[in-house]
Length: 117
Image (cartoon, rainbow, N blue to C red; front, side):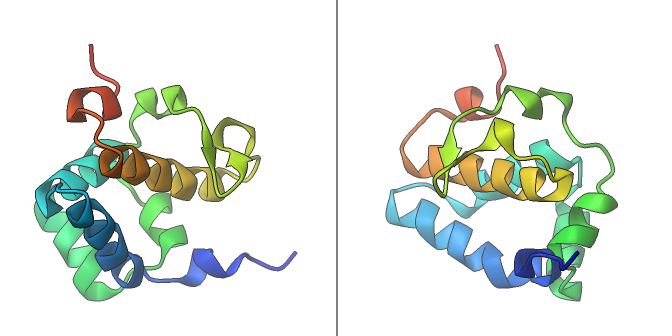
């Protein structure tokens, strides 16, 4: 089976797009970083190292220190597909991240995005 192209794409090549999308809507880079850290368990230093090293998405999620168990609470449609229906685990993680950045850009409170009470 051929891997989807996004799996071999570096996180650092998409990260500026996440930040730009958030900033266009009045949000901040730090909020994007917080979302990524919440989802993956990376520290800020580890995140920055992966961005600098041009780690691909597949590796980024495969070696994540602790994928947040509350990520299963992320529901909705991204790119025309319900995230909860995506079967491939790596693609689901990537789409979770996309969905969280979308929610940030739509103005949701960070507490809601991070599925905290």
